Length: 533
Ligand code: SAH
Ligand code: ZN
Ligand code: ZN
Ligand code: ZN
Ligand code: ZN
Image (cartoon, rainbow, N blue to C red; front, top):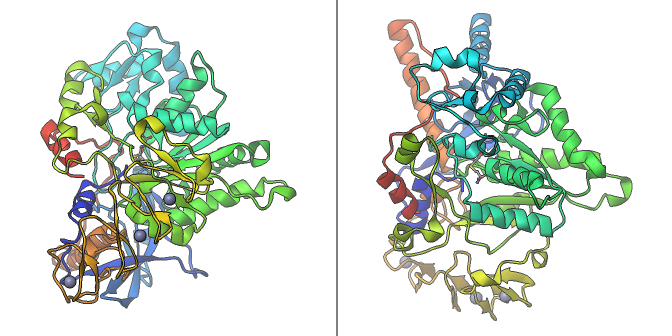
């Protein structure tokens, strides 16, 4: 769900991809790095290489792992660049300055004080996105402050906090209650007792609500997320400030140990990892991180269970299937298509001091949207055998005995492919020339000798993607495009900075705002963004 909208737009448009002048950037993971990667405020940076139409440039550089927008983190360093002591010190100071103002322990202490206050004294500053203690009131006098924060509200921080909307870096696409409920029920049916929530704050919240509710469930949850604001609402053992693109724990060893203990409890039995990463990010760094979490879990395994894998739900768009399976061949993609985002009416939120959320299932606008399609492109990728994952028949899913998995109603078993082939919720058609099933909107093109959209341009450079060369998508929908754009810009800026520097003799860094929230976007604009997905 964490998706820059413009990607989804282009994916739906299937093939309007431009081909001219494309170039891209890839992450490299040197097997034997000579030096450790330099640090930005988000932990170790990643090493990138610029690729021009398949040809690698030799000069590699480091850039931020988490931010795909230089406004959020402008780190840039050539791999072979030697920095002066003064510049290293300035960088170190900058990294320090960008860390959250309160330590994890301070946050917990504040939280404990906060819950002891009488209701009338429990205030939350919407402007600063912060719970206030009486000592803070004066400083927030001029801000928009809401009072009477109930225990129920404290238990649902994702409703109290504005979703971060920076499209490139930290877009938060929260599950609707219905989607979230589906997940929690599924986890509980599958018998899990611990859930490691990586970038799923709302799932974490719902699991905990259930554990403290009337019909108590016994599922525990630990949230790892880069959104520091959550540390105000959780004790050390249920939230770690974490960067999933480089496996960095912002609070160091203590936080890493929290995660390790959680994974290894009960000899690693009963735990699952659920993740819903921003998909403007690269698949490879995520895969590297998840493998580290898997290894951490494995350390705690007893000898006889060596064969087992850490169960994982990776929530991601269907068009990343190929990339994900490159790193995790045992993963399969489930056909569940009804992950819906909440639609937050920010204007009303400002008026009433709470989030009003609309479930798109019930939303007239959505139902009659531009594409007229109800499905979201987001799927669950998992290493749990799909026949164990029962999808709701009241939503039209059925069991295919041949595929041994639950599929959507429209997804028909193709006897030639021997599989239920649809990926996107529409019925796909078998093409005997291509020897596979293709999207209903495609026709076979005798010039290109494969299926494509009727209005494609024939003959261009042999299909496939300009950035990574893979055949199943175009440049505009390449899983690597976001970084490629950012880094190209970074390279350009770097060059520009150099020339400016020569002119002015100085450069200025940008600082990062941990709670930058865009609130100006109109409701209409948001609805539009969603509908175009
Ligand atoms: N559907 C989920 C939210 C997914 S939005 C839910 O409802 O629970 C993506 C989440 O990933 C956000 O919470 C965001 O803060 C987090 N995130 C974004 N970049 C991250 C990073 N580099 N490391 C860790 N978490 C990140
Ligand atoms: Zn950074
Ligand atoms: Zn089938
Ligand atoms: Zn077929
Ligand atoms: Zn053609």
